[in-house]
Amino acid sequence: MALSTHDAFAAGGGRNRRRYGRGRRGALSEINVTPLVDVMLVLLIIFMISAPLLTAGVPVELPKTEAGAMQDVPDPITVSIRANGSIYIGDRAVPFANLSPQLKAMAADTTRPIYVRADKAATYEVVARVMASLSTSGFSSINLITDTGGPSSGGEEKERS
Image (cartoon, rainbow, N blue to C red; front, side, top):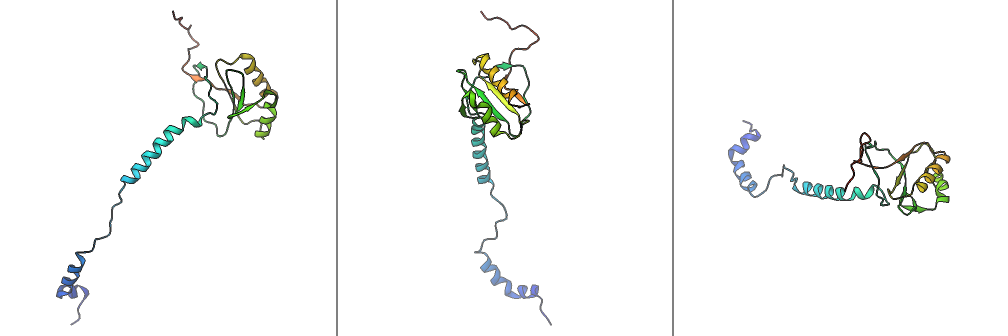
């Protein structure tokens, strides 16, 4: 008569196996996700804090308008004008005479969008000169950036006393 493997364990071989098997731990079949959640929350907080700092390099106080938000553009060039009239490309200060040559060097394609961010205290003359320089340099997509939530154009603004 031939014994199968089940018969060998039933005949007494199983007792020794069970005795030695009690001290060993089985494979852990569940993944502990608590450390993963902790790391993800820390990364979320870091990105929430750092995201507003990445929007623009030069702090300006934008005028408020009722215009809606624009769609995100993949890689625009940002020209900022501060209240004192200084001009920046990205976060680098640029004299007005070098504005057009530096923008042409940065953008091989003149259809690349340019965002002009002018402080609300900047003079109209400086903003107009920058816009004219961009236009005569051949750039066709020039956008003025403002804050939303300004007065509506349909009614008159109330005077404050």
